[in-house]
Length: 115
Length: 116
Image (cartoon, rainbow over all chains, first blue to last red; front, side):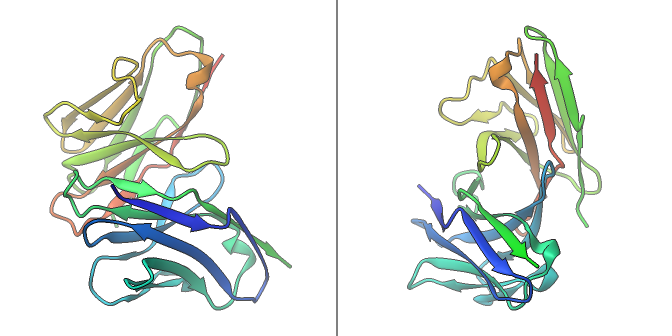
């Protein structure tokens, strides 16, 4: 079975500081990995996805993530935080269709940005 | 880009009544749709996988007679919460996977259900 673990349910950074949100995955097959952002009472917006092409993936709003197979990690980073980045972030893994392509989510990390 | 429309955005219903939530892919065909439930300050819990023209596959612990899913066309899936009770109050989100797409998942904006 696949799973993802997000380390830290809450991360707080100052505006302009580096954002690092951690995600580790477990998968018996090569995974597809995703990062989503959710604002209050809204659906999820895709930030970026890894589908076995380049290991360094660039997404929207200045976010990027690096797939590290040896560490089973897919951490999300942004060089400089904006106030508008404050939201809930979810890492997710898909089984590439072997089990119907289900998307399994981590527990989520709430990002706060201090002025 | 791919858009998924989910309606209603919020609904309040009386205990014992049924509520239907619609999920439509507006500009692409979705062979597979997924329904999630989210409690406050928690992650998304997959309830079921809906495939066009066939029965939905429910996750363990999800009552299929309580949460009826229909995927009658390549652009529409519905979730009906039958005989709703206050414990069914939650945020429900659908997701559609584009047919033939490179594992792209597009999410609806969610439905806030409150059962009183």
